[in-house]
Image (cartoon, rainbow, N blue to C red; front, top):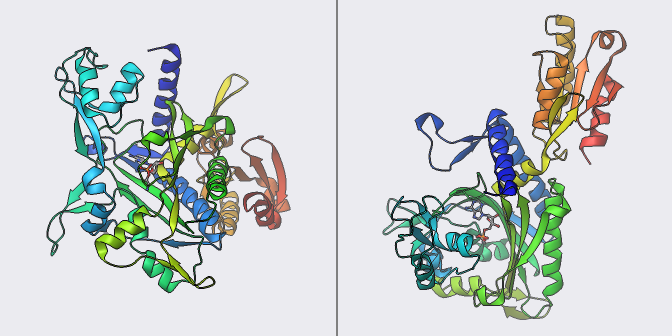
Length: 460
Ligand code: GAP
C-alpha cells in the first residue's frame, strides 16, 4: 500500500468510526454479528438523509413547473423487468480465488491488477486472470471461471405465479405510470416525472461503507422530450443542475469531475451517458448519472403490455413516443459526499476541534439551546422557553450536560450551525448568546428577535 493509499484508508476509517460514534450511521444488526455491509441511519444520519431528500425535491419538483413527483411500489410486475431487460441482462461478472475463497467482481479485480477495462468480456477476463494474475488478498493465482451473476433480488408474492423482484432501480415505476400521469395531469412535453425511493441490488461485493450497498435509495427523474428536439442543450443543463446540487450539499468544485461513457460501451438505444463523480477518500466514484435513453423504455413497455404509451401534442396535432433524458443519483452516495466534504479537523491552540462544516440546509440539527447551568431552575426554564419558541420551525436540540465548552464541541462535531446560551444576564435583559459554528464568534441577541435572526440565516 502506498503512503497516499494509506492516508486515504485512514481517512475513510476515521469517517466510518466517527459516523458510528456520533449517531450518524451504524452497522446494521450489530448485536447479531451484523449483516454484510448493511447500515442503519442513526438519529443524526436520518435527519441528514431527510434534509438531502427535501432539498432535492424542492429543487427538482417544488421549484419546477415542468416536473411532477410520484411514489411507486418496490414490488412491481415481473413483466416490467423483462421489458427493461433487467431479468435477462442485469448481471455483474464474478470470480472467486480458489485458494482463499474471496469473491470479486471480475471487471474490478482485473482493472485493479492490470489497469485494463474488460467489463462484459467474460472469456477475456477468465484468460487474463488464469494467465497468472495474483489474488490481492492471498497472492494465490488459481481462479474460477468468470461467470455472470444476476443483481436482481428475488422473492415471492401470494396469489402471483413465478418470481417477483425487489426493484433494482426506481425508474421502472415511473415508466409504467407514464399513461396515468399524462392522462391525469396537464403535463406538456418537455416534462419530467420524479421519484425518491428504495432500490435493491444483489451486488457481488458491497464496499466502501455506504458507497456500494445492496439496499439503497435513488432519486431519479425521467425527463420526456420531443424526439426531433435539440436535446444537447437540455442534456448540458441537466449536467449543470446535478453539479449545482452537489455543491449545495457541500461538495467542493475541485472534488467533482465528469466521465463520459465511451460510445462502444453505450447500450444500442443510448445517445450519451455522463457520470458526475466525486473524489471520495478511496478515489473518484460515480455520484450522479445522466443518460439519453431514446424511446427504448416507453417502446418496450408498450410492446410487452400491449398498451400504447404515446404523447399527443394538441398544439401541433401529432402523436409520438417521447424520448427521455434520465438524471439519477443515489441518496446514500450524496450522504457520504456531504459527510466527507464536511469533515474538518482544526487546530485551536493545543486542541484539535472536529467540526462538520455542513451547509446549513444539510445540518441535522440547526440550533442547540443550553442553560448555562443545569442546577439553576430559572436558567433551565428560560432555556426551555427559548427552545419551545424555535422548535416548530427548526430541528433543535436541548443540552444541559457538561460545561459550555464541551457542549459547543459536541455541537461542532455534528455540524450544528448555531448554539444559544441562556445565562444570568438573560434573566435580567431577555437576551442570549448566539455562537456561530464556523467563526466561533458570540453575539448577544434579544430573545424576541431570535426567530428573525435565524430566519435571515437559515431560511435562505
Ligand atoms: N435508472 C438508472 C440507474 O439506476 P445507475 O447508474 O445504475 O442508473 C443510479 O444508478 C445511481 O444510483 C448511481 O449514480 C448511484 O449514485 C446510485 N447507486 C447505484 N448502485 C448503488 C449501490 N449499490 N449502492 C449505493 N448507491 C448506488
